[in-house]
Image (tube, rainbow over all chains, first blue to last red; front, side):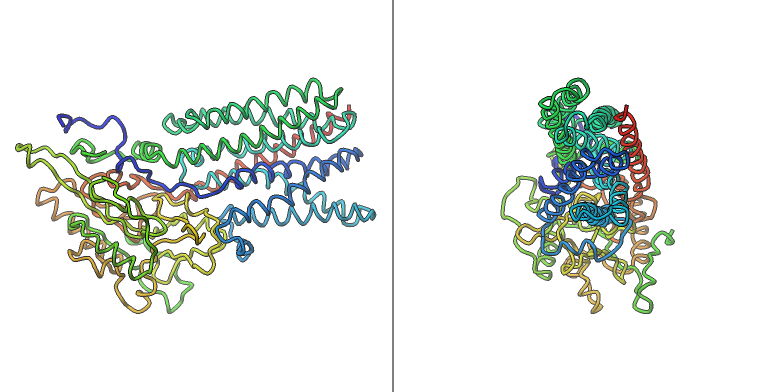
Amino acid sequence: MKGAMVPPAKPRSYYGLPVIAKPVWKPEVPLYFAVGGMAGAAAPLAAAARAAGNEPLARRAAAVALAGAAVSPVLLISDLGRPARFHHMLRVVKPSSPMNVGSWVLSAFGATTGLAAGWQLLDRPSRAIGAPAAAAAGLLGPVLSTYTAVLISNTAVPAWHEARRELPFVFAGSSMAAAGGACMALTAPRDAAPARALAVAGALLELAAGERMQRGLEPVVRRSYEREPVRALHRAAQGCAIGGALLAGAFAGRCRRAAIAGGAALVAGSALQRWAIFKAGIASSQDPDQTVAPQRARRPATNSALTDSLAT
Amino acid sequence: MSAGFELKTTSYGPEAHPRMGFFTDTSLCIGCKACEVACKTWNDIPEDGLDFTAMSIDNTKTLDANSWRHVAFVEQRVEVDDPVQGLRWLMSSDVCKHCTHAACLEVCPTGALFRTEFGTVVVQEDVCNGCGYCVPACPFGVLDQRKGDGRVWKCTLCYDRLKDDQTPACAKACPTQSIQFGELDELRARAGERVTELHERGETSAQLYLADSDNGVGGAGAFFLLLDDPEVYGLPPDPVDCSRDLGTAWRAAGAAAAAMLGAVAGAIVWGRR
């Protein structure tokens, strides 16, 4: 009452209500980020392993890519408000929409991984169709793993939009850790050395880029990661990545059980990381201060000392 | 100044109209909610929950799939000599801004959201597949998915009425001309005169919001005269079309994808030892 002329210590708002809308995406979406990302990193591993003559690893990596390519559309279609209209995603080519670009990339990835796998099942000479298809999938895969970071950062959600430079590296690292982990668990240790190396490199990239991303956020936006349940999810993701990388680097080369445990930890860590980032965005969207404070800093207020809202 | 409002509606050829919009002058709003009712009636919008919020007399809370006009009520204590008289009540009818640079339209993967021949932004209900991307893309939180329907809905600026040279339902119903409809250039000129008049009368807090193109959405088809800072009404003080930074995000993704290919190659070489 007496504070009428005192500028408010915290950003003003309309009854504390959010300024932007809460994302309506269901849990299928972050799950797709993890599954599609893993498939996207497995495809170049498959192509490179085949080129290097490591057929056992190539087959398993191709299987991981194919499984991810098969599951991903199911997750995405189930998230739609009108699933029967899923094909509307492909009625236009629209570079301004990362989701439209991603739909085309996922379609092409599914076609090329499917073609490569089908060709191999038919046991035809792979040079004609199989090898080019696998190579194309290997080039599309990294795009599939990282475009989802572009997609969520291209929103008004502060915790996602502000992280647009770092998020693709977090997603790339997380995808490599999951793909390397899955392939190292599925392959005999003597053939799995490249998968283990990819898993360790991916986990390190995920941890480093994730740390850099959080430090780059403005303090008011960083709150999204400092509050529960996101903090706990993020810690769990970090724990899985560190534990999985240790198992992959130190024990998985000698012990299949360590490879399976490490691979499972890395896949789980990748999914937890996407889930934490997804939930951080939801929390960020619901906090009006995260939207208003950075904008207000760019554009000085004209009236903030004039009046004092009774109810806000 | 008006150059910022020139939209690429040239693809409509002879059907292209001057850009139409709303000037919502909140200094004239009496909080009757006739705009909300007229909008719901004309557009046949379903009920949106009947609850009492204790937020002054705002029981609509926000724009969403089933509320395309929302009247905000702000109770404020102001500095005057008499403490009993020292109150003011702000009312403002919020609506979709029909931005020049509309993030919703740019991120829509199906092309369901489009720019009409009037320069407005409309969702085609027979195309929308409910992907939900426009919902967090809008810097004003206007778009929303309708439960049980799955598609996204928002103000159309009464596209059907505009096609018949009719005034949108909310502006037609407004009893105080707080909601003014017309050609955007004309509305802007009128708003400029109004804010000058209010300043001369001593209402120095009057300010225009999104009236020119000097903002992150390139100006709005629906702009406002406010009596306090935008955030007091639940509006973002410096909204930005997120697509402005899309190039930065894609470049980072390209670098991350290249790093992934490099890591795979390195892993294969390392694994051969």
